[in-house]
Length: 166
Image 1 (cartoon, rainbow, N blue to C red):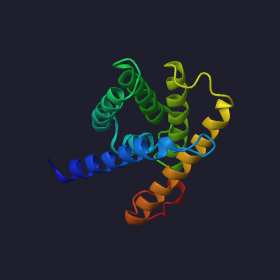
Image 2 (cartoon, rainbow, N blue to C red; image 1 turned 180 degrees about the horizontal axis):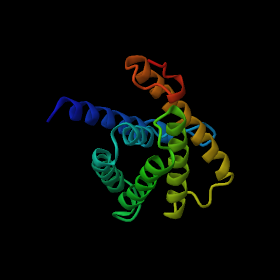
Image 3 (cartoon, rainbow, N blue to C red; image 1 turned 60 degrees about the vertical axis):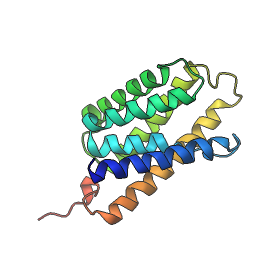
């Protein structure tokens, strides 16, 4: 197993444990970021569909096993969601700027929330739109922080209009 796979696996395990054991237990009045979704969207943004789809399938299968949804519904939901996000990235957001990443995170958060509502998770929650709005804001803040931390480490992640001419 190459080092990059080991680091990705470790990061995804830590994000999953934090998400399931700590963040999901916060009350609905607090914004609840989805670290797993933001991580996978960032990998889709940086690595592409061919590598990210296997991480999506594996993570969704694990989350589907420990959730109370029908057996493969989580896998199907996330595959459809991430394929739609890949289509948006490939056809609409052709430049890989911070704005494209933020739009993908917003669309991914909305898609996951509506998909889980369709599966029967949050139909009866009052003010669901307020919870969704707080989740979008929290995911945007997490992804922006992650983007600029990686940009600080690696200077290749520069928005296209900030690239200096040669």
